[in-house]
Length: 168
Image 1: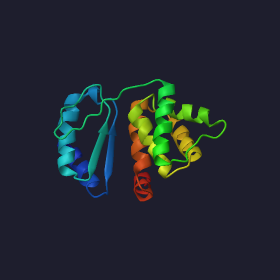
Image 2: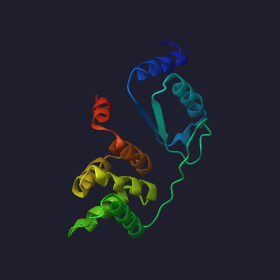
Image 3: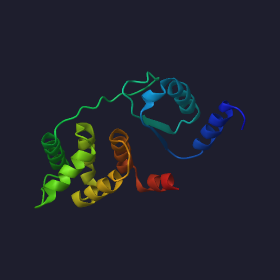
Image 4: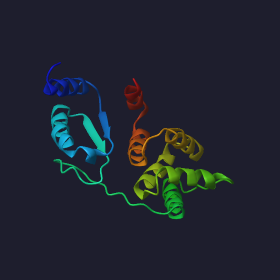
C-alpha cells in the first residue's frame, strides 16, 4: 500500500466486516488535527465503530459526547460505591476485611464517581469478590488510569460473545 489514504481505507474495510468495534485512544490532545481528520472518516466508513478517547479538551467532532471527569476523595468514593451497590442489591453488605478491597477498587478508578457508580452496577453480574479480582488483575497492567477506567467499564459491559470476538 503506497498511499496513506489506502491504509485507512483498508483499515475501515476490515473493521466494517466485524461486529461492534471499539477503538480506544488515550491522550488524543497530543495530535488533535490527525484525530479530527481520521476519526470522522473511519466513523463514516465503519457504522459499527464506537470511539472512546481521553483528552484534556474536546475534539469538537460531530456527534461527540463529552464526559468531564471529576475526582473525589477515597472515603466519598467508597460511600458512592456502597450506595450504588445497595441500589443494585438491597442486601449488599461488606464482609469483614472487604473494606480494603473496596479501597483498592476506588483507587484504580482514581476517585472518578462516574466510573465508581458504573463499576458498582456490575454487582448485578459479578460477586464483589469476583469484581475486585477482575479490576485488580487488569489494573496491574501499565495503562493510564483514564483510559483504563473507560476500557474497564466498556469491557465489563460487553456480553461474553463480544469479548470472545475482541480477544480473537
